[in-house]
Picture 1 (spheres, rainbow, N blue to C red):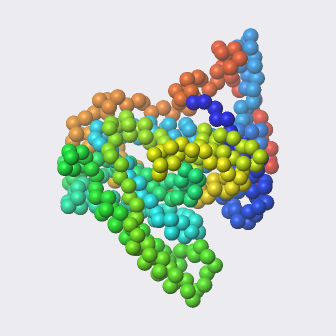
Picture 2 (cartoon, rainbow, N blue to C red):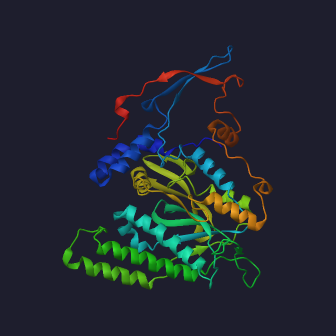
Picture 3 (cartoon, one colour):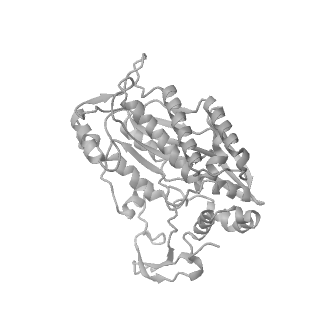
Length: 403
C-alpha cells in the first residue's frame, strides 16, 4: 500500500478558506465540520504522542499525531474497512452471490439534496422491500434471502449520483426455515436472481409512495423557495413524470466464488467520494484526478477542476449526522445473522472450516502489517527497533471546533 502523492487534506489546507469565503452560509455546519476534521487530521492540532526507537544504538524520535476518525476522511477508514470485510468473510456461504445496483433518476437530485436523510433512508427502504417481497413470492423465488446495501452518492467525476450497491445471496431459506432454495437457472444454464424489470417497477412504486406520503405529512422540503399556491401541483407533475420513467436497477452476473465476493466488497465499503490515490496534482489552483469512463469501455481518463469546485463537489457527499451507510437485511440482519447463517450451513452441509476463512483480527497493528508488509511501529532508520511512546503531546484548544 504505497503512500499517495496528494491528499484531499492538502487541497483543503490550500483552498479551504477560499471555498468558505465563496460559499459562506451555503455550507452546512456538518460540511464545515468535515472540512475542519480532514484539514487537521494527523497534525499537531489533534495532539498525539512523542515516540522513540527502543534500539539503544538508534534512539530516533518522531511525533505520532492522532487521526480525526471522521468517516469522510480518506486516511481514517482503511482499517475499519478491513475489519468489516473480515467479519463478512466469516458469514460467507458456498453459493452464488449477486451484485445489484439501484439508481435514482437525476430528476430527483434537487429534492434529495434538500432532504438528505429522508431521501437516503427512503432509498434503502424501497430497495430492501422490493427485494424481500419479490424474493418471498413463490412466483419468483419463494425464499428469505440475505443481503447488505451500501450507499454511494457520487459518480466518477464527483457529481451527485445517489445509488445503492447490494450484494445478495443466490438463494435463501424457505418460509418454514427447513429448506434451502437456490437461485433459479436461466435457459443458458446460468444462475440469475430476480427479474430486473419487476424489481425496477416495484422499487419505483415504493419510492414514489414514500415521497408522496412525506409530502402529505409536510416532511418534505422543496428545493426551490416555497410557493403554497403552486407547490402541490408542481410536486404532482414531478411524480407523474417519474412514474413514466424506467428506473435503473442493474444486476451483474453472480460472483465466481466467495473469495471473489470479499475481494469485491473492499471497493465499496468505507469510502466517500474519492480516494487519495486517485489524486494526481494540484497546480495553479487546479486539481487533477483520475476517473474511469464506464460508458466508453471503462477507459481511465484525467479530469481537471478548479480547486474550489473540486472541494464543492466533494462536500456534496457529506452524509447527514447519524445516517447508517451500510445496512444488512434478511438472513444477514444483525439481530439474527449468526443463527440464520448456521441454519444455512446445516442445510447446505458445509462448515466454516471448509471455506478456509481467516480469523477476524481486532489488533490494528496486525491489520496494518498485513496491508503494508511492515509493522506500524518499525523504525525506518535502523530497521530493527520499534517505536515506543515517551509522553503525550498536548492538543490546542482551538482545534476542538470548526470555524
